[in-house]
Image (cartoon, rainbow, N blue to C red):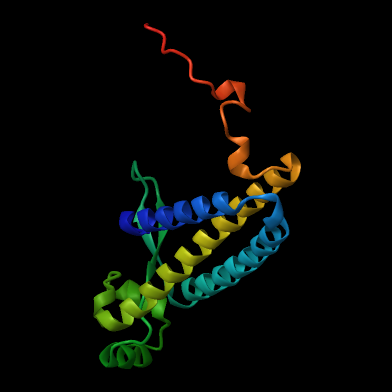
Length: 175
């Protein structure tokens, strides 16, 4: 996942957390628990969709280990449909897509056009982003619901310096 995609997922998670914090109060706990369970199930469905994309369109590329002692494998994504000439070559050679990709020194552009590569990558990123954002949201919501149930107070009411002596402002020490 690129840095931009990672930042976007973190942004979504942060927004969901703030909204959940705002609604974390005793009158909403039942709905929060139900929503957390629903989000967890939906997150799992998106995990299965992500896993399916990786299984169907993912290929293993060997990458030399640091120090030159063997190889690790990294995942690269192929495209949805081969270029016509690549499909013809695959059939003529009678090889699987992994072997054909190895023969092309893992240059995916030789086997798939950009639209087919983009179709796979976009879906993989979408499924992964939704899975992560909803899973994190489900966990956060369950945590806030638990806090509200245990304290019998809204989450925002618990975090006040008057209620939490450890949070009181103390003068900074000059060291």
